[in-house]
Length: 377
Image (cartoon, rainbow, N blue to C red; front, side, top):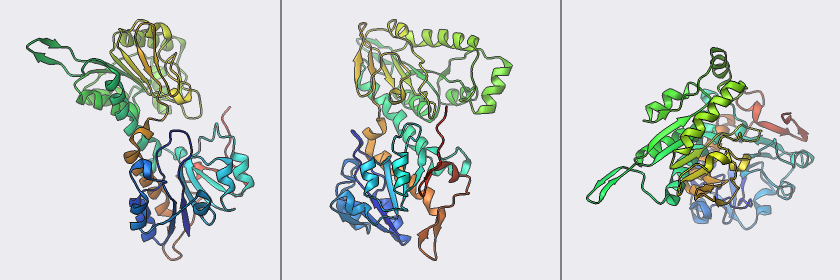
């Protein structure tokens, strides 16, 4: 079987879906790997690395796709890219199916589309979880973006000229990205506070040296939060009001704010209101990691750094993983290998997609001419 890898065409996308390391893994399993020239350059993987790994480098996307049985991508293919693929090809990518306008085009072409971001959060799927691998790096980089814009220092210093106070960092949303942001800010010497709708996150925050911003929660709400994993429950008006007061106080006193809260398939919740931003000190920095799905911060703009009237900078970088492309590509590519390898048939040296597997089934959004995915209401 042949695996096709092409250069990503989405604006600002620097990652690649297969590195020389994973290309070598696939060729050792008996697959032919065909890579479009230049596909890995932006992620520090030049053509000669692919060639040395046993892959074939071709000039165009059409050359890489025309005979590919499996296509590996970072961003979902455009309708034009899908048109270059052969009927029956299996395409793996981050499809964002809730907002993807090309599902019918994929079906018309007879493709089988696997949305890697829909891999369920079960133990054996962790090594294939692209959301976690990319969020981990993004949380780290978000703090560095803030540090670059912040005109003071993160750690406390005792100098002959006086004491430098440590930066106060607030992290809203303590998933994979939030935890890495806390750890990174602490390593840089900041004082860190964090909040999340999941009570279980308190222990994680404190284990990293952060202070938990506690929002009063009824026993009924705690049960809902624990029963749904923390993201599907609907908080009461009292909880929303109490959370807003605590967030307003913490953010108003912060030097750096990192927001990470996103809900798959839905608009990101607004956590920081414009009136709260207006209370922040001049020179404060906010990184809205959810800006690409609507934003957690009022006033944030995708792809822009907004300076407010009171001197606060709001960074709206919509694709932070692409800023660390060498690392995120390596992790993403390994996620692909980890997902596919268990379905590799050693005898035929081919892939047999296990549609009934609990890890695979939820990811199939288009299957051989039929759209399977149902968009949430």
